[in-house]
Amino acid sequence: MNKVIVIGGGPAGMMAALEAAINENQVLLIEKNKNLGKKLLITGKGRCNLTNYSDMNQHIKNIVDNPDFMYSSLAEFDAYSLYYFFEELGLPLKIERGDRVFPKSNRSQDVLKVLQKELFEHNVELIQDQVVEILVKDQKVRGVKLKYQGQLEAEKIILAAGGSSYPQTGSDGSGFKLAQETGHKIIEPEPGLCGLKTKEDWIYEAQGLKLKYVSLKLLKKGEEVFSEFGDLEIRDKYLDGPIIISASMHIDQNPEAYQLEIDLKPALDYQTLDQRILRDFNKYSNKYFGNSLSDLLPQKLIPIILKLSSIDYDKTVNQITAEEREELVYLLKKLKMNIEAKKDFKRAIITRGGVSTEDIDPQTMESKLVNNLYFAGEIIDLGAMTGGYNLQIAFSTGYKAGNNLS
Image (cartoon, rainbow, N blue to C red; front, top):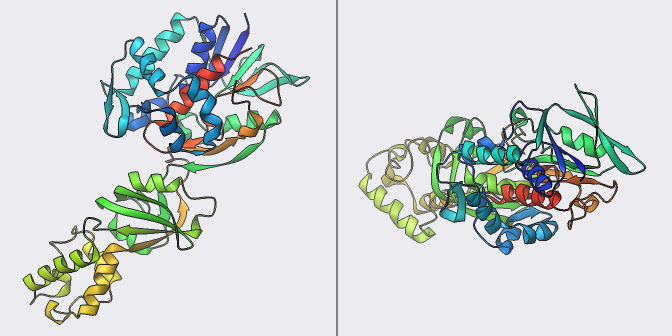
């Protein structure tokens, strides 16, 4: 029997601790928050999108950062295994649009409860404290130094301290420091699945505007690197919503090299949209241009389009030329915005970057540099799209680490 310390009580840490205990190890789970799973509770807007009910290839396809590293973990514990795992624990699940898996209760609290119950039943000891140092001697772990309770010895340590996103949940980047102090390379952490700030001033006037069923293209120096169809929202000086946070995963550490191109009417091609506008112009032929778009656009968007268009606001519709109408069609189909920066970690769903996968054995999750030190979850340089893929990474790597404490 090994004495195992797991650092971090998020989904990866809880899974790792549970599997280590099932394998008859003496397990201490150290969490600096008063309660476990603080970040887990806010995932999926409080509903907890546990995984995506799809095969390994689909998950690999949706992992943006170092997908090949995850083959072994997903082969050992995939989405179907995770689904069965929770249902066996008595948590009923459901599959929604896009194969997203949620608890039937729509309560992330219920996910946490079943995990806590299993940890208790398998005699995992919980310690509320903060690890300030991992003790290493002769390239082998010896234990940890705690902030308040001195030192603890251990034969095995699993570091699952999370990333830097939503720091108020305890995911404040402190795990990166622990890993770096033991000699591991840290890929520069950056926000992932986050909102985007743009250079255009007009978004200040459109706060609260929600655009549904629009098409987005992400361009880098004029070349398309990503496209998506769905909803976006203009918040307090930045863009948010499903298609925006997806686009953020395709932006490197030089955001200013990117541009967004929004098609406000993707269901209509240029000719059809032109005919639609022409019908509206005929309907409002004697009105000012500024009063002719209410049938076509959301009220809050109209002043923006008027500002971006070269057509005078007080020009009567029957005076608008075919060339001006063509320009309006082009504007609605290719509304451009220049990216200034990503939103910070406070609102980022995940952290990109972290402990380099080159320093970790994907077959066991053990460090290649320090014997008996293992990694799991968001602390590793892994990141995926929305839809349950990131929580699956956490659970799969936690399962892998807890089951490979050789």
